[in-house]
Image 1: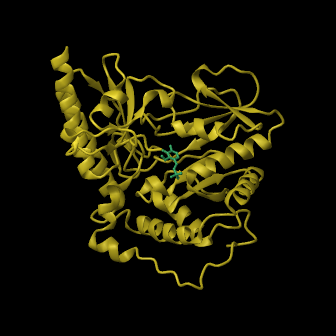
Image 2: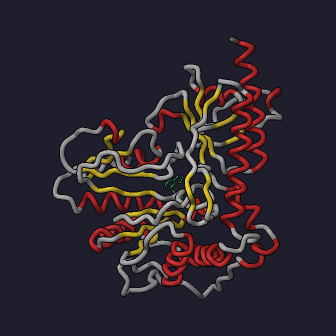
Image 3: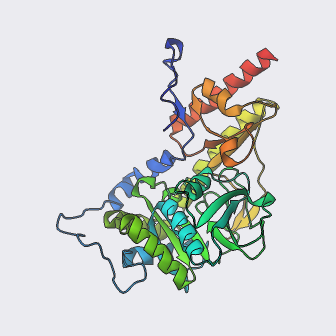
Length: 382
Ligand code: PMP
């Protein structure tokens, strides 16, 4: 599953273990949560007799959502200013992965025409293709690149902004009156300037990528239309009969902490996280620069961030690394035991790879060193 089971590690490479930068595991932020202050503030204790019911609030459309989590989500969005929560239903999910599938189910089952076409502009988050294809549903069908999509009839476009894998700020590209699912996993101020409050019919967020708690498997959707929200809840009811309350409680504690400290410069996760990703991007750009014209990285425009009150750039959670020559960059990196996600999986070209920027410090440093080695090896050959 992870792609390195069959790799032979020769004795000369035994000192060079595999660096897995394929998955977007966001462990880079763990050190923040291990600091003395946060270590003590974010402890959660749950007695054995508690949380035994499936239900949280039978009067709510999303009956398994805990009210304190709903309040914590709204408070955080208000404090950051990145999304409107008024007059919306909150649907909590087992990660936003489950919510994306719930939204595909909801929109397509409410549509008169089926199967509904699902598109996303290239390069797209490769999981969308898997989510839209793996059950071979008769409700919807993956149609690939939104930019070349010209099939008549209703459709759903998934818009990710900032985009995974290439970090660009995106808007819908089809614009023919179809439904749009906005995935705002990375629309948080440590990754990108918060230029305005997003206000759309379906917006997805994930606890995984805010401060790195992917293991809790919590995501949420902000949904305007009650019928869509109800259908999403129906999907979650059939799929997993709701979402773990233990996880919801932990997410509540941590989201409340993010909100409480977000304006205290010395404590704010967003200040810390911004510094962390910015420093990594600066190191990566320095190394790519050193390699002359071997590798490429996208450039991101500056924009005014309403949260930080200053102009800044985007520092995506993934690097969209390219090579100038016509090479299979994923294979090239794999030879140096660096696992990345090949561009073809994102509907793009094999001369690009997606690199996780949020892995452990040591993996990131080793990755930079190996990039330099690859560059020297390529130069010797040519
Ligand atoms: N959307 C995007 C754009 C992502 O990058 C990810 C995680 N890689 C997800 C959704 C899914 O996040 P989760 O299921 O962990 O909430």
